[in-house]
Amino acid sequence: MDKQPLFWAANLKLLRTRKKISQQHLSDLLGLNRNKITAQESGKTRNPRMEDLVLISTFFRIDIDLLIKTDLAQIPEAQLEELEAGKKVDLTGRHIRILPITVDNSNEENMEYVPARAKAGYRSGFSDPGFIAALPKFTLPELPRGKTIRMFPISGDSMEPIPDGSHIIAQYLQDWSHLKNNTACILILKGGEEEIIFKVVGNHIKQNGTLTLHSLNSNYDTAIINIEEVLEIWTFIGYLSKELPEAKAV
Image (cartoon, rainbow, N blue to C red; front, side, top):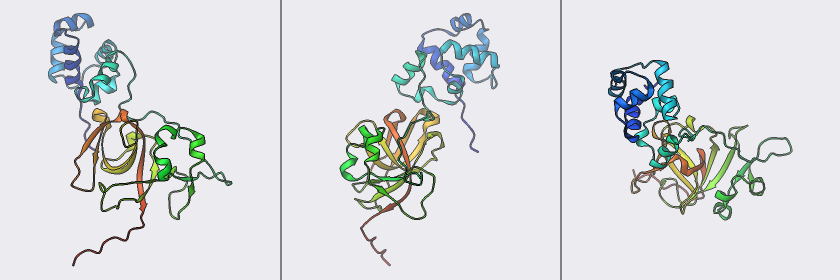
């Protein structure tokens, strides 16, 4: 298992300076010795007392887990302001999403196909049971059973050698914290011209609440998006295409 980076020292200094208070003032407010604040901000205190963790977390109104595991300097200013205001901001993608599904006569979950004509309306209808029920159904052998699976059309050449016009078969990812780094995914986005995109996704949710989007086609640049821009994540299973792959040169 990779070693989890810790950000307690840097986050403590960041939050204190954002409040424009000195170490002495903070120590007075918390009833702690100033040397203790100095040692924690410098990282000299490797294992702060639990009482100190709770006291500081309560003062800044930010969960201990975030203070320790998340580099607050890397998250968007708007989210940081919400955290400082005491609001619950999901930087992990672990919150539950209610996904409408349909079942067949055997009470087995259907596999839905999002055709090109429905693609433009998926962002507004993804949580509407009526919209999902109207989607065409499909079935293919050897797909995972008991999982939520949909098929999405893609366009463009950013993921070549997967050709333009292919149909991506993907499995719904409920808990985004389980997303493995560099996984090909269909992403449903909240805004922008494209609402359904297909990319190789780098997972930085735990560190700073972002995803890195890579294309298989090297002519395209890497992009970084905030997790708050994402509505759904579907992990790649396979694809269908009417194009015959080009033969490799000998």
